[in-house]
Length: 114
Length: 115
Image (cartoon, rainbow over all chains, first blue to last red; front, top):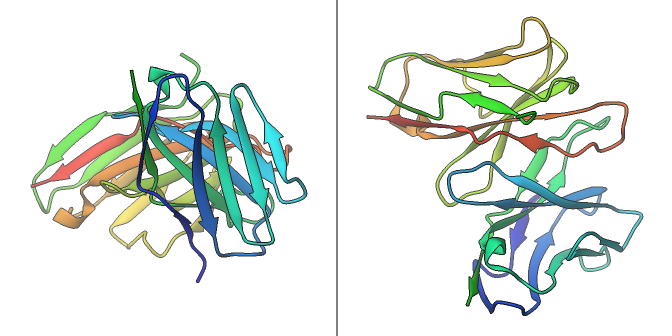
């Protein structure tokens, strides 16, 4: 089916360590993927995106990797900080003509331990 | 604050009542989206507008739901005859066309509780 999922529902890391959050998707025709961060009581916050013609994209302390062969997406967060604690969602865009009809995974809760 | 604004933040209503939520998108964004998020799940697409035109509706959007964006700026989402299953966070988001895959910017949602 067409779905986006996550390998782990929770992840705990020590402050300062790097974290990797994984996501599997099933629609090989998807061409745009996004990572969102959601803190308690707030809406999803855009982190980084990647198009299917790329396999890596870097932002500030974050890197997204896309492996189209195995339909896998990951988010790497470097030097984690307490403020990184949140639920992280990957999403794939099923919309046409730039419309953002996103299909989200269930999310991974990242906890940063002091 | 130049982000997406939603009102109210919380709404508690009794089953069978009608409720209406409002969303003010980022001012230069011409696309506006409604999503619904239940506890422990990711958001699910409901509908979207380009300017005042509603271009797509999900099958999740039953006939008790109606969304409008009359002047191409703010939008309202109305739920008639609410049911307990309507309890969820209703998220509004906006984006800009003209830029391929312009990312969505979400508001902080309206949390609806139907008792």
